[in-house]
Length: 465
Image 1 (cartoon, one colour):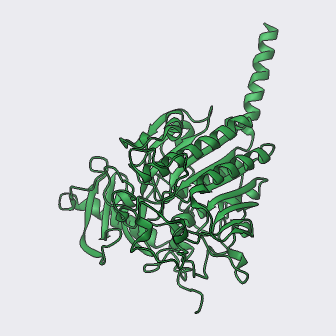
Image 2: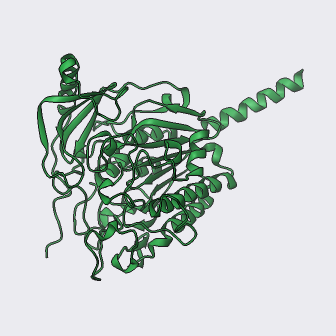
């Protein structure tokens, strides 16, 4: 009896010790992946076995949101836990930072990497940055100046440095790509590796670098941020995956991205740290449907895609995985990328500054207890303008505009209203039946607006010619 009691106490001590350890954090961020693009989210022909496994072993979220409809503001929101309008990382005309932009994420913003580094984490980014173009006169925009110890990847989107070589109109939407159409520079830290990287090898190289980073970091807590280049167009897959998917090149690219997720999970298991690692997979915004049927993704049952504040533009896949800590579930909790910073900061024991408002919430109750969290209102911004808002199951559109190719916004004197619990496709407008709900949403938006201090956009200034 005494021996059994001693063994039980020893096991309990080990369990408490493991629970008290700072967990590793891996965030995998796809680019332009749609809500309907994964097997576990219902796509009939795209095969994603590793992500499907993550979803079956962890939590698959059905109402997870990016905080913006295009990539620069969405990445700023993920890194800071704040709406990008608060940091100047949004603009109504220049929706993302361009290759000629001189602005970037302000140094005064605290990134997830800086927060975790302050409590002893090794931090790394592998993939696309798109929060500032670094140059000799702008070194502050480099990820190494925003809390990352290690960096490997591209400055921005893979179509932002077109080569001088003649190419067809809307070249990045072409199924067959000439690699010489694009000058996508690849960096390791501050070192330029190649001015025109072979994009067919990018996903493989990201996976290899990630496995190496995990292996080198296994003896201390680490944070790995993997913002993938794909499935943003132009699409490239390696010979191992090209031509294998019934979905065509888009499916090939996602099959390779899914494989890379499997390599990350394998590295975590091989190094013995999987049971102390939170892995979260999501996307920066919805699918770029304007690219067409073959190279654009799918928002599934949701309306529209990237660039819009309809559900298809900002509701994205979200999968949380942590063996032994997160129980398998499908959750309809409303969470956003902004919730990740306060969540991992709490898990790591990092204090967030008290001198600024945070829009993200600690999602630990959802992840570990199966409970919801209180959220006053979730706001859908397009650039610097608030277009829509969600409160509970209700969503009001104050302004609507499609993604790309829809030139003019439409302002609604009586906001459009949808009940997302029964109508996630936003097909049935019911504002006339629920004026009280509209009034509650308008009041919630006004409370939110009272917390916004206007700042100058970082997306305006460009290199003088």
